[in-house]
Amino acid sequence: MINYRKRVLNLTNKLKYQSSLKLAATLALIAICGQLPAQTAESISQPSNNLEAILLAVSLITVVLVGFVVFMVSDKLITISAVRVRGESVLEDEDATADLSLIPSLKEILPADAHASYVGKVHNLKRGFDVKISGKAALVVAGDLNSPSHSVKPTDFLGMQPIPKMMVEEGQEVKAGDPLFFDKNKPEVLYTAPVSGEVTQIRRGEKRSIVEVVILADKQISFKDFGKADPNSLSREEVVSRMLESGLWTALRQRPFDITPDHNDVPKGIFISGFDSAPLAVNYNFTLKGESVAFQAGIDALRKLTNGQVHLSLNAAKTPVDTYLNAQNVEKHWFKGAHPAGTVGVQIHHISPVGKGESAWYINPQDVVILGRLFTEGKYNTKQLVAVAGPEVTKPQYYTTYKGANVGALVNNNVGIENVRYISGNVLTGTAVTTTDHLGAYDRLVSVVEEGDFYEFLGWILPSYARPSLSPTFPWGIYSGMEYDVNTNTHGEERAFVMTGQYEEVLPMDVYPQHLLKAIMARDFEKMEGLGIYEVGEEEMAICEFVCTSKQPVQAILRDGLDYMREQS
Image (cartoon, rainbow, N blue to C red):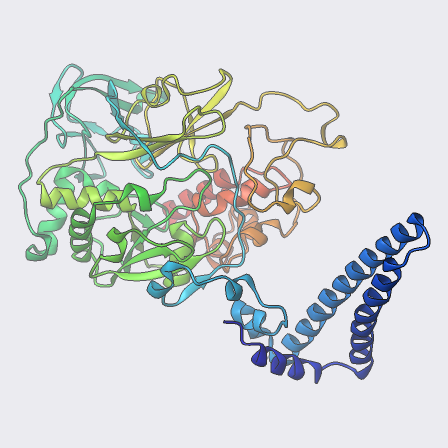
């Protein structure tokens, strides 16, 4: 219930900070707004002619609208003045700021969400921007997808040597979990087959670098047996050994640098983002239903790898799936806000920031399930739900398949037009692929959007079609829930890299992204460290690239800086 007594007391306290002139003006306007409608209504009841009645009706509407605007503006001005007197710290608390207003918020009017009883402290992120695209996958599983081929790409694993040591040859038969190759700098870390079948192709790129290992999948997948075990009864060394042998060590990534971590290191903590805020993202509440046993086994295994905590970040705006709620031996955190609130880098920043000489590891929640199966089933079973989504998809939905599935099999007869771009991952950070390519190692989404290979007539001079934009000048921006049919057109070329403040508006982290990028371009090592390069990755900075007026390749610049820092460390 709304506590109006408390609100009147708050209003009285606020008015103490205002000048008598402001108070008198506000009360006078309220009196006028109260008297005029009554007088106007009385006149309308006895009109001399139709024209007079219309004029009086218009006057009534005008007075009501002006009164409403004056009231809203006055309430806002009083609130701002009260905040200044009470202290700027009030601005950090959304509820405290709302309480200074006489107008109740929707949160107070509407009943509390069902998830409210689960929520402790909420990290309420006020900066960010949701790129709303039509064609999100319906919460429907179309069935098991029999992809003809699957692949593993060395290029998906940052920091790996371009020519890893191959352990198989073309024409060789493998089981799911059999090793395919390893990095010469880390021979203990094996990269294994996601399915059983015949190795049909070892694709090479420039300078004979290995780009992809393709496996023609069996209709019935057979698995290498690693043996069942309870991770709680194993030592750290035994858990690490199983993960290295099965290939699941590569599911872990490290901040800084987003590389596969060294198995001899011990991180300050392991982080799992339980939701994804990227456009068209996979709904983990849906994909993790019924996976409580495997998820808990994965958590128990991760607990052996760190002396710190395993952190699970959840979406405070939605009721989490039972798989999350029932999870034990994990510290739960709640986040609320626009993208990139669902990225693990933002969450690490607000939970336990990574400093120089420190490392934090992270893993996708679906990989936690696959890790759990390694112990509950004794298999490297990468079966998972993959979403096919986007404006040009006829039926956006989910499919059950294994890692590295063929893109063509996923989108087969499900795209409305021909001139499209297929993206392995989301539209902000994903990789452009063709129907002959395969999903990336960390991707569970195929995004399909129209190819923007066209020019707009007269460019920005004429009104354009509706599309996501941070700019308030576009009229469609007032519809907060509107989703857009987008294309890949960048609407302009690269321009001068000037300071705009746009990046800071959408990145909810205590870093200066534009200054950081300029320090990277200048190769200023100390400034890069001081400006927080160890805390950010491409998935956090991708939203900066989207809103960038200068059309800068933000993610490419950042990756160049991260690689440079890693080489120097």
